[in-house]
Structures are given as C-alpha cells and as structure tokens.
Image (tube, rainbow, N blue to C red):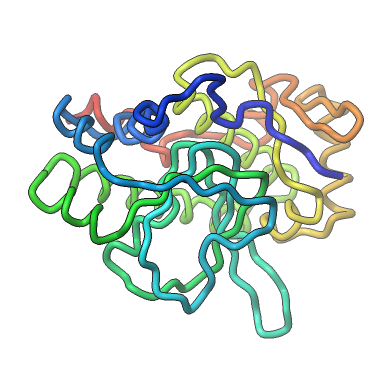
Length: 258
C-alpha cells in the first residue's frame, strides 16, 4: 500500500540559479550564512540527475566522488544483513545533502536509494571541499548538518529499541511533518508518507501486518486519515500524544541560539 507525499519540494518555475534555493534554506534553518556564502553556493558547478524509485544513488563499498543534494522527491539510506534483511536507517527529504559524510569519509558504508522519483543537484566533492575550506560559516553549516543527522539517527535507535509500535509510527509521522514544514517555510497542510507498509516495516522494525494494525488504531483515533492508498495527518495534537513527541532532537532553533 504505497503512501505518497504531497510536498515534494516542487517549484513550478525554477531557473538554474534558484534550483539550489531549497538547499540553501535547509542550511539557513540551522546555520547563519552571509549573502556571499549563499552566492558562492549558487555559483558552484553542478549537474542535474533524475532517478526513478529504488535506483541507487550510492552503493555500499563505493568510493564517493560526488556530493548529491536532493531537490525534489525522497530518498533513503539502508543497510542489509548477511541473510538479506533490510533496515532503513535514514529518510531524506527535499533540501537535504545526501552524503556530506563523504567529504570526510571516503568509502560508503551503506546504500543510498531513491524512494520516489527524485531530482538531484550533483556537486563534485573536490569542488565542494574547495568551497568550504576558506569559509568558516559554510564549514560550520556542513558540520551542524552532519550532527543533526546523527541526532535523528539516535532518536530512531530509541524509537526502534524502546517505543511500542503505536508510538514508533506516530513519532515518525510527527518527525517528517516538522522536517518538511521547516524546509517548506510555510504551513504544508499535512503530508502523505512516501513509504509502503513493507518499507515502514523495514524502517520501524515491525512486520507489514503489524504496521497495518497500527495504522488502523491511529485512524480510528482520528490522528491519521487513510483515503484509498494514501495516509495523511488528521489531528497533529493526537499524533503528538501517541508519540510523546518532542522536537528537541531536530535542533530546529539552532540559529537563534548562536
């Protein structure tokens, strides 16, 4: 049962220069950047790459030579066990740099794949390194972005290890809502999750059957709405209660605290 996303980072008219606006907004959401810093990002050479769902952006064991930024669509990181079991370990939304860690760690330790049709801005790592090296604000922005991703990973570990199925799913929905709204910089009016029940199971450490039962509980409570094959938020306050949600780990107010 696929559940698609209403807000995909789409912009009906985008010039080459303002394509990177969503990426710059993401960095500005947690780090101060001067007008010159922003201009230098926009002037950095890049190519546009479009992929279909499940196509690989980076494979485990590869040596990364590029730094892709997600402009439209959704992507995910995954790890696979020796017996073929899959764990989705990160969900990436429009505006996210997909592999900042490859600026510092040469070999990929995970698979990175498109979840929906995606559009990427692809920078050469050597170009991005030259951009960041003499600019402390940009270097800090890259570091903070990596640290926030690590913070989200810690919360996901807690989610899988210590929360029950109902709280796990509610927590994930709350997180994605706040992350999307932060980058959209407007009321997105809810969203539709871009994950099948099988993918949700691989993300939350549950079975697809358990995922379906959990969705029904949230639906009966009015916290989510399911229309045909789509799932949207119905009542955010109820969803937060099920999750006991705090957005502290998202560090959404990092800039104001500087």
